[in-house]
Image 1 (cartoon, rainbow, N blue to C red):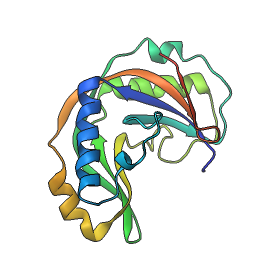
Image 2 (spheres, rainbow, N blue to C red):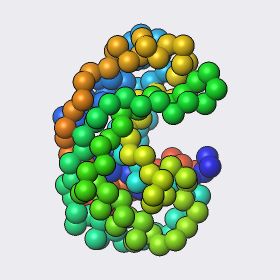
Image 3 (cartoon, rainbow, N blue to C red):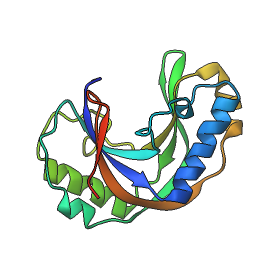
Image 4 (cartoon, rainbow, N blue to C red):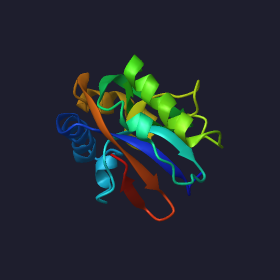
Length: 168
């Protein structure tokens, strides 16, 4: 799914800065990093829903649940051959799980990406895509420690048009 629409949870300024510091550290070491993407739409976030298409919905119930605690618990790797996605696993607090459920309830049934569907969701904040797994130990040594912050707002990301819409 390359042309997708997603609903994303944006982080408080301190948590966003913390993730950007990890992005910068990886990039400075010559490793894969989301910090290499300089688009103004490139922000640390937790993806709550991904679908090939999503009609405009009001997410009032989900937004009313904000802010929610976001804990960057430990690094996690989603491997694909000799490469992988490096991310911070986000601890699924009761508040975060309820927000995820509220987003899906507002959107109704649909063709969810497997990693965002209720019951199959792995909340995380991506640090690098296509990281060479033979550099994983070096990459992990560059990361800061766990961090506790907040998820403050929601946005809609449309990959086909590379646009975001703040949902607040």
